[in-house]
Every structure is written in structure tokens, then in C-alpha cells.
Image (cartoon, rainbow over all chains, first blue to last red; front, side, top):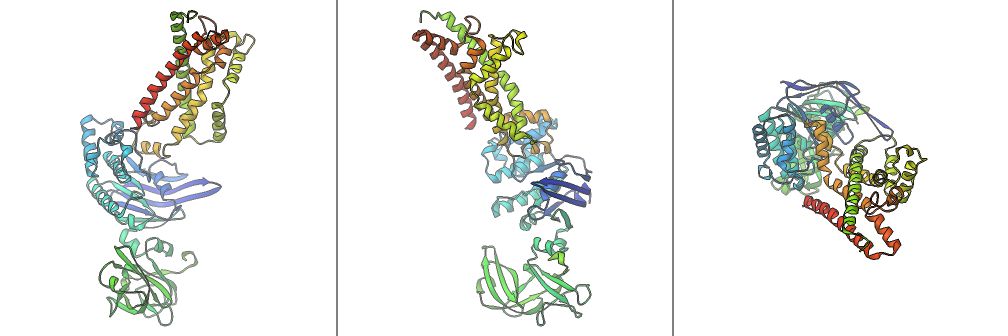
Length: 350
Length: 218
């Protein structure tokens, strides 16, 4: 793992309409060939962080240091098209670096082809569609052969299919070039398409940083859990027999090392709550009643009532139980203890 | 038309063009950088400054003429320069009339750019002098609008030019002041001939710029 960009003890301050905002990041590294997703709600400081990494804003304290050879470049949330052709847009940055004409042409063609817009090279950049413009902005950035690439909400305003195609191309480009990339997003499902690691920003603080799977399965606290899609958070008390008691009759198996009697949240990702008519996969936790059934034609989301709590679960839409179940049906719930994440329940994490 | 020989017409026309284009170039040299600066930078008092510029667009030329005339008047602060009733004084008045138009239209063009426009160039490593060139290219339609507006303002201007130039034959007489003079004298034929030339100039200059502007939009 080669860190291409180091951040240490970073402090950024911003004043807006009498409100002071501070962003603290103790330590953060961007690693070559890897994509870091910076997740957070609006106003968490994601774009502020990205601008500081790009050198656009000067920190009040701390260090942002590029350790790799090559430029640090950024693609903005609203991709910018400069006057002139698509090709001219890519060449602007290359000419500024004093490259030879043949090298400029080679890089320009490679970058445009990589993002599937080679056939648009001669078109006016201002006439591109939103998706094409995003591809141009990425091609322009990759043509520079940067050491670090910072992307602010790169999948905004794209439909699901375009998002999927762009994320695939982006992943391939990162793998091929070995660039260290950071993707800012407020939407986990968009960021998860491309990232290897996740950094969660909340209220100007870096609350969790780790490999994608770890952050998704083991969020540091309830606020992070909600942000990373752990949609089921049940208040419970740890019992001594390896269960967490939601109430006298509803218990959830887990492998927490916290002492019995600890007030906790039991966190369950919707995809880990198994629903079945008979006995389900994993350990059964009891019967529940379907109270909501919605579908976006890809995923069906069921909300079931279990022990006075609402639990969400996802099924693949259009087949099996997703087609059979109706509101009011009774189902069996089960889960695997290793999928259950137990979080200490202090006042801050509510 | 007999009062106005062809040679005189040519001389007046060339002088008009010289004064107007001179004033236009100076107004652009001063107004474009000022407009870019005002459009891109945030600082205390910016809004007030924009207010001054915007009110400058509506300033009556006769008032501008009055101020410039007093400046260059023999007993005025710049009287020693002996520029009263000179082409320099006329150009000065026209620059002051055109400047707010240029600044305001450039500010509007620059402010319409995405706030990250310059940041994007910076993160692509584009150096400052090149960023300025790209900015001018980016706001070229706004610049053309500024040129058309400024040219229209100064080419048709008569009050301030009369006050500062005095319509001296062979020295400061331009198309507008000559038209005014011939109208007062009742020599409408000559006045119409000059008016036709003035209109022709306006049409050719503004038409050319509009054609360029329209071509850019396609």
C-alpha cells in the first residue's frame, strides 16, 4: 500500500452567515490504485475536505502532502466545460504541462476512448449532455496522468444505467493507471459502486475510516450505521447467554464482547434479515407481519413488524417471495449471528 | 449638400471613427480587467461598487460632458494641459460614458460562469496568464455585447462631445456635432447626408459584431 497523499491534523474553518464551521481530520491517506469514498450528509464537510486536498483552500492548521510524483487534480460536482471542442478541453491541461504535440494527441485520444467519448472529440463541449460532460471531465483529469484524483459527487444527475457504466469505466481507469482516488458522495449506493475504503464524515469530524466491507458491517456508532445503510437499529440489552434482548420475548443472537446488562443498539443491514415462509436461513428469531411492501423493480423493500419494532429487509424484485408476499402476511425471520452488529447505546449515538 | 464637400464629409467621418475607436479601445483596456476583477472577487464594498457602475450606465452624457469640460477648462484642475476643445477631451468624455457599460457587461458575463470555473483550471495546472486568456475566450459573447453597447453609446453621443470638443471646424467636428450644427442652420440636406453616414457606420460596425456573435452561438 503506497500512500499517494497524506493528511495529518488537518483543521479547516469556514464562516458563513455568522455560522462557523470547523473540519478536523487527524489522519487520512489516499492510496495508489485505490478509491476512497468520503461519505457524509449535506454540510458534513466533504467538499471542504476535497478542496483542501486539491490545494484550493488553505488549512488553518495541519498538513496535506502529496507523496507521489504527478499532479493532484479534481473533478467538480458540476462538471466544467471550457469553450471549444471536447478535444480542446482535454488538450488545455496537457498543453499547460508543456508536453509535445504527439504526446498530447496520444493522451487525448487514450483518455477520450477510455471514457467512451472518442467519437465526440470534435464536438463543442457546451453541446454535450450531462452524462457526456461527466465523462469529458473524467477523461480530461485522467489525461493528466495524475497521482491523485479527487471527484466531487461524480454520479450526480445520472440515471442508474449511466451511473453503473460510468462507475465501471472509472474503476477500470483507476486500476489501469494506479491513481489514488477519493470520491465524495452523500449516497452510499453511489459511492459503494467504486470504492475500496470508506471515510465517514459527520459534523466536520472523521467518524470512521476503514475498508468498505468493515465500515458497512461494523459501523462505529449509530449515526455512522444509519449513513452506511444499516437501516435496522433496535435498542436492546445484552444478556449473558449470547443474545441481546429487545424485550422479554424478542431476542437476537450476537457475538458481542460487551458485558451482559449493557444497553446497546442491535444493528442489522436489511439484506441480512432473512425472510421466509417456513424456516429461514440462519438462526430463527421469530414470526413477523409484513406491514409495507414497496419495489423499485430492482429491489423489493419489506417492512415487517417484529416485537413492536419495524425491521426492513430487501428481496430481489419480481421473483420468489417478493412476488408472493402481501401486506398482512406472516413470515419467519432469521439471521446469522455474525451479521449482527452490536453498538454501545450512549446518548450521543442516538 | 453643396455646403458639405465630399472631402469635408470624409474628414469628419474619419475623425468620428478615430475618436470613437480610440475611446472604445481605452474603455476596453480599462473596463475589461476591472469587470473581470469585480466579477470574480468578493470583498467588502463590492455591492456598492457594482451599484456605482450600474448607475454609471444611466448617467446622462451631458453631465459627463460638464464634468470633463470643467476639468479641462482653462481655470480647471487640468487646465494647464490645454486640452479643452480638443480631441483628447472628447475621447476622455466618451471613455467615461463607455466605461460603465463595458464594466457592467463584463461583470455580468464573468459572474455567469460557474464558481468552480477557475478552480477547475487551477487543479488542471493551467498557469495564470493562460487562465486569463481562456477566461476572455469564455466570456467572448459578453465582450462582444460590451463592444456593441459601448460603440453604440459613443458613436451616437452628441452632448458631451459638443461640451468638450466644441465642434471646431477642421479640429473637433464629428458627425453628431456636425448634424446638430446643420440642423440648427436649417441645412437639412447636409444634416441628412451626415445622418446617413452615421447610420451606415453604426449598421456596419454593430452588424459585423452581431454577425460574429450569432456565429459563435451556433
